[in-house]
Length: 295
Image (cartoon, rainbow, N blue to C red; front, top):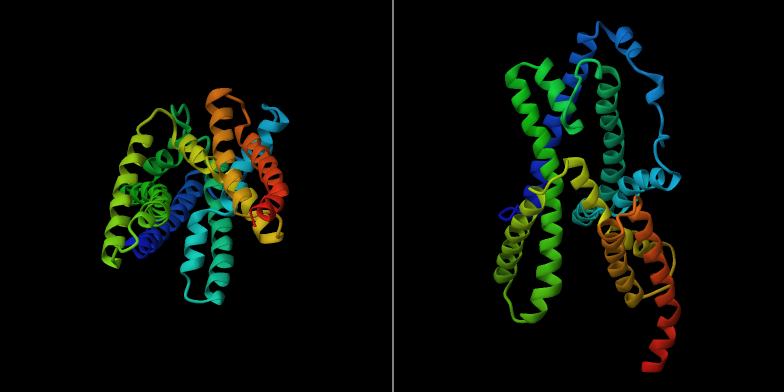
């Protein structure tokens, strides 16, 4: 990522994605075969598992569980970076729609595998290990190695996109303003250094206790509440300006951290969204008056 930038990110994501999709289809066929065919496999599905919101948590906790993956991905930087990097508006539009379709279709495969094949694997210490364990049990060792590598790489693919975004924002918006005469070569070198530095930080974050699911959830929730509020107002209204946007972004991250680790609330993301919205509207309401007074 530090050497190849967005092009390396896109190429590795494509290769990993193709291998992962093929692996998922192979595992699905293997699960169906191990259970005795399509009809027998579908009889393994427990209707009680079809609960979109669940019943073991409060209403706010259920909404929180759905809000993070949905709202946290609406303005995900992986999507924005690839859209802006497209060579034309038509390519960006078609790619986004095609990617959504592929994502939806492929996303149903691990769900089917889990619904059908839950009887094949039991007593797992970590729920995150279900899919690799099924693959290890049903696939040839060589196929399992390839699939497991693609699965880990797919998880890491979100990391390399995040590294690019963090490095670009830091180098371009924070450091380069202090170096107005920097050459293009220096700018690229600085961005690469930032990628490596943030990679080290990501490693320190990754070795903490917790599951992969927990870490992905935290990464999706932190900061995205403010981005969601700013993005919605920017796309669909002219209300508010840079001060409102900046305040909402800061408040969103701060509110999530306090609600999550300070008060240990079960729905910190909803708190962050509400706080960002309140701050954005409040600052946007006084922003025009402040601008008139300064003028």
